[in-house]
Length: 115
Image (cartoon, rainbow, N blue to C red; front, side, top):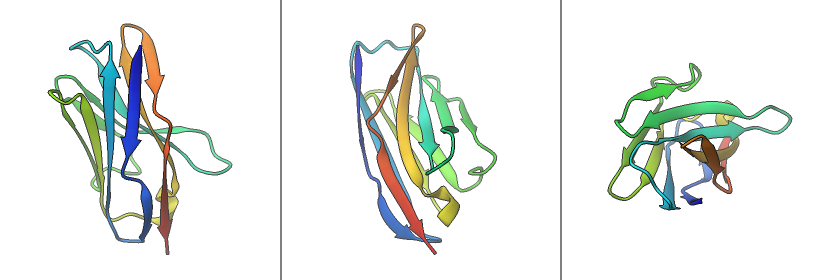
């Protein structure tokens, strides 16, 4: 089992920045995939960004150039630096962790961007 604890959500004005963190604990293996999804009210959950244990990254087109995903393998923690935030970025952001065919989810953290 893997447990995920997220932090860093909040409310910010358009153009502002926030940094999300997600710490994993439990049965951690060296080869894994971590990332972030988000879900806005009335919309499906969508992938925001992913990062492999070898730090290969991928982003949704809507956040490219504004968001940066990174990780600290020693701390089993993934980060999402969100810059130039837009009202459309308002959503609950969920951290996820994938290894050995299993997916684990964080509890979600609210990000609200006001215009």
